[in-house]
Length: 204
Image (cartoon, rainbow, N blue to C red; front, side, top):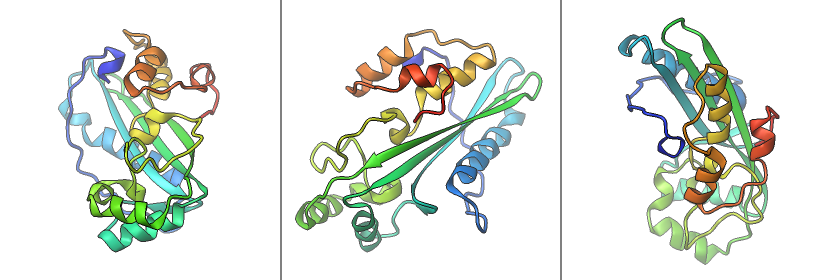
């Protein structure tokens, strides 16, 4: 948010994040994003916009949350090793003045490398995977689990900035900064998809 130049405050949203029976990952993240935005609706000023967001890791229709323990982390990393999964970020923007709610979805394909067992076990022993959905951090410098990535890096880290930008513009809130430039500079990543996203395509 700071990269975009918007003024913002952070408020916790106490919502039940349990998965509904048969719920697909896309529906799950959008439902939680809307629930988070609506949970804060009674505590903001009328000239404010509420952003609710939720990010999850999915292998097909299976959602991979934060691992329960080291064994669970190992099982997740073994499941993801050597093939491509998806990271999904749902965004919900609620304009307090009139209750207008719009949503957006970023689905990013993430190709994992064939990391060795020793690398994986050392990474698990570091404790880093235990608070990460899918049991990994894309930006981890030593483990470096992802190869040939060509999607929205910001979404995998937790907030799809260009998707947020285009959604806020629909509500009349243009960014104060050059979002693609700020995002790429801040994340040290050359993004190939931002023109498509900002033009309204379903790119991730």
